[in-house]
Length: 432
Image (cartoon, helix red, strand yellow):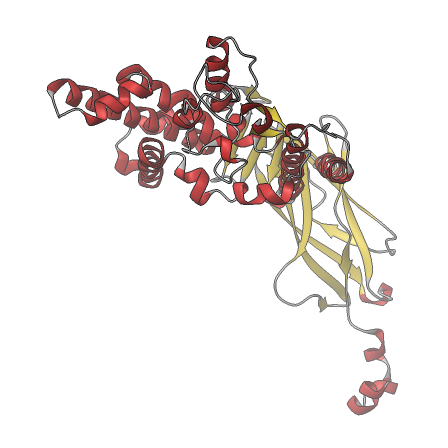
């Protein structure tokens, strides 16, 4: 998915394209301007509630199976390592061996592949912000022509190489805050990876009487990426990858014993009880999940392909000349579609007689993903002004006839009381 998303076209743009330069953000056909990014709050909180929900049910299953860090490490970098250096036993043997031409060759090949893979991942990351076509054009020029982009790629490459060649699971244990939240999000009915002490203890060799199924082969410890012993219970470092489950089941099957000594289950089930999936915590998280999904769906439905708003120009809020009262505004329009559109304008609201608008009589064509600033001069005879009033502008798409209405803005003028001789005394005016 990470590699494919920038290549998949949706409505003329990549499926995910964060066009920071032009301040346009495309997500699966939905185009957002900077002013629309408030929708992201509901998306992020919805993802957070979903993570709470999944963790309460199945522990750190996200860490072991879906976290991008785990996916890249286990399915790319460790595959490269196994291909070049062999399995865990062969790697330990190679690490302890003296530096020979064979060992040097393997090290150069492995770390060269690490650097190349990190470069590829970093370039794909950049394509989310400049598009695949933009990235391809950049690669045909000198790095000095795109210094910032080149610097980002080099920084990411160094970070990825350092993380996946050396730091590895230390990131999950030391830096990631999610593991520390696990104890607050889970309870005794949460399904986790655990060791069945009732069945496995006491440990002993095969053939020894009075011992459990655990033969103390330590395979579960050897395969654990964070180096913990799952037989000591649930620990902060456990990322739920189930490597210990596979290792233990393999040994059990070789010994003709039932698999599942180390398995997915709840603490209640390991003690002989029954796991309850429906419980107050889950009901509460389900409620939050639906609230988050509903809020995001509602917020996304409020996004329109045209954004139009009216701002008052800088300077005096109004001008009076030759008996005419004038307000000056600036209308900003953003066309989020992938094609040019032409728009017409009309005032709406409870408009007084004699109101005149200069600048709204001619249609405006906005290019694809373009932005247009249109000045509006709204005039009214001074004698017709009775007090501030609200106006809004109806924008009509000439192609499909769809209309959009701006938020109401206010037409202002001088206070009528200032025109009366009764209030010429400043002290009396302030008291009144």
